[in-house]
Amino acid sequence: MSNVADALFEHARARPDRVAVRAAGRETTFGTLRDAAAAFAKRVVEAGISPGDRVLLVAPTIPEFVAAYYGLHAAGATVITMNVMAPARELGYVVDDAGVGLVVAWQDTAEAAEAVAGERGLPFWRIGPLEDWDTSDQLDAPVDLPDDATALIIYTSGTTGRPKGAELAVSGIAAIVDAAEHVIEFSDEDRSGTALPLFHVFGQIMVMHLALSFGTPVSLLHPFHPRTFVEMIRDDELTVVSGVPTMWIAMLHAAGDAKPEDFARLRLASSGGASLPAEVIRAFEERFGTRIREGYGLSETCGWATFAPLDTEPKVGAVGRAVHNVEIEVRDLDGNAVPAGEVGEVWIRGPIVMKGYWNNPEATAAVLQDGWLRTGDLGILDEDGDLRIVDRLKDLVIRGGYNVYPSEVEEVLYEHPDVVEAAVVGVADPTYGEEVAAVIVLREGAVPDPEALRAWAKERLSAYKVPRLFQFVDVLPKGPSGKILKRAIDRAALSDAAPQNATPSDAGPQDRRR
Image (cartoon, rainbow, N blue to C red; front, side):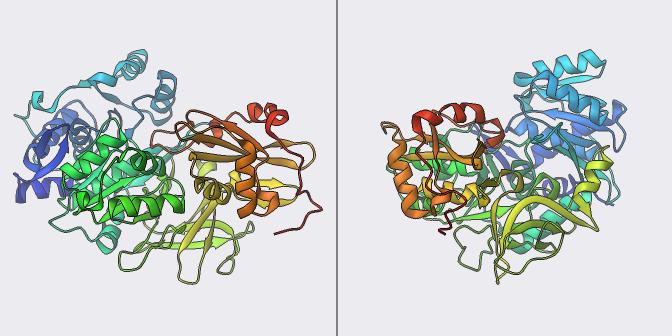
């Protein structure tokens, strides 16, 4: 029997005056955070929310999110967190699908959530600044829950069809903390920080929950601004920071005259969400004095599965090895393990794997088999057990019978000095089935030149992998965590652009150059 909020309460008892959260110039101690969470939990219980009842929390990356989050857990509720920018339609779908009994939202992002609750006759709580919370009446201790109780339901982004709610058990989240104890090696001197959204599994579990579980102060930034994030690392003397590739890229462009000695205490930069270009890793180490270590995980695995061990030199392009008590296999489409070095689908097994998709047995059966999770990601395991994610299975481009992995092409494009961001996708083609297309964000002042980028790519890639279509944009579509959303790229617009920037193909099915 346990509760996700147990560690917070324990650290508050042991060291109530230790800083737990830093944000916007404010410091919140473990004691203050515990008092707020315990008072919130008491209110939740008195409102008739029973253990296992679903509650929706909509709040940004601020201390009030942290207090409400742990208050809901302490009361035994199953917590559902969602993007503060989600419209009423998306919120309404989740509320109906999960059978939510209470809606809670931060005062500045409450409009859609309040409307959804009102339409359904559900109780709605608007939360304000932490200093205004009444903490006089508190729950004595977190509610004891069975290890297999559903602590969280994280709704996936809905790349195909409606979003699905991944049920994460109390034991699964505890397994993440156990794995981190073996991998990240938090000490009493550590200070963590992020600008990731806390409603996303990465920021919520892998940053906020891990830090507070180990009694580590966590600095929060909202909204993300690259220069402010750089300043937060320096001013708060952070030792562990976490982000996604788009954040690191933006920070490099905003770092100004920053030098490694400005970040002397920084020992670990953790990246996830998407593959990180090697050029970005090299540039970040040169500027910040720390090599970014990549990890890999999904909402369905509590946000984690692999990480580059701290006692080994991280391999550029790899996302590390299976973390403690987790197994990774790479299999072919028939479910058979492939030899080291060969591409296949990544399968994961361990206590971190979700219970299933909420109220969706068909979707659950499609991805959970004999305790293994089919991820839908293509990867390669090397002889050391290090995993390299090649691409999403659904993002694979098959051009004239050849497999083109977009991440490989993007890696080459990112090496070009004028390219800030790149997304490679496949578009329908009557001759080759699919054609390789690239959507590019250029550095300020750079001139769009498809021919120059083609020539650059052709020097570094087999001919069939070279993009034939280019589109230049000011910004790429991104999800709440900052991950580039390829599904939001308009393929029709890319096809329409073909007469302007495509060149005659020189690598069709008859061209076998590798």
